[in-house]
Image 1: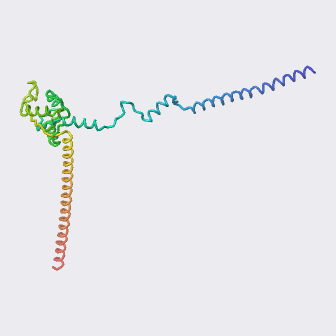
Image 2 (image 1 turned 45 degrees about the vertical axis):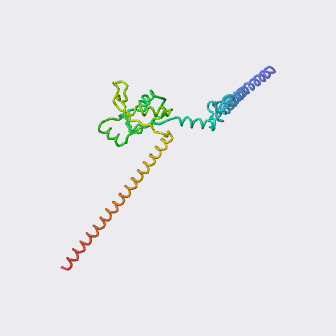
Length: 254
């Protein structure tokens, strides 16, 4: 009896221990899951794209807008301004009253650069209406120019070029399209590039004012025409009503 009771106690203790083991395992698994969640939370707090300190410094430098030595714009001094004005006073402009058909600015610069250093070139394009007519009937879409201005870096060279080339053939290769065309060139004394830009701005402003005046004039004419048409309709309706009234009165009298 004593042996049976002893074995019974041993079996009960083993049974209790087996009961407690799953709960401990569950507790350990829960603890492991909790720790993993904590690690994930810490990783999420760091952010998906982590910026190193060096990258952060680079970003700060970019945001501050620090410029290199080459990018820093130095202020314009009186000495540099005087040098610039002196260089501009040395330049000279020539006027081309006629541009050979479809000759481009690069071609003119190539031809005139043989005689001296060429600066800026401006060629005035032809009237858009003329170009549209040419494209419509002749199927020629090339750009044509009517007149031009060429800047030489030395006004003496500009004066000599104008005197030597005016009314002379362009020359060059005999197979060139412009071989037999003549230069129509004139030197413009005391005329600089800034005067040309001012003149172009003034002409453009005058052209816009002229167009606006024409548009306003056409609008006034259209309004006057509409008023006259409406007035004529009103007079016609009045006359028709009078005629009908006269007919009705004559019928009643008869």
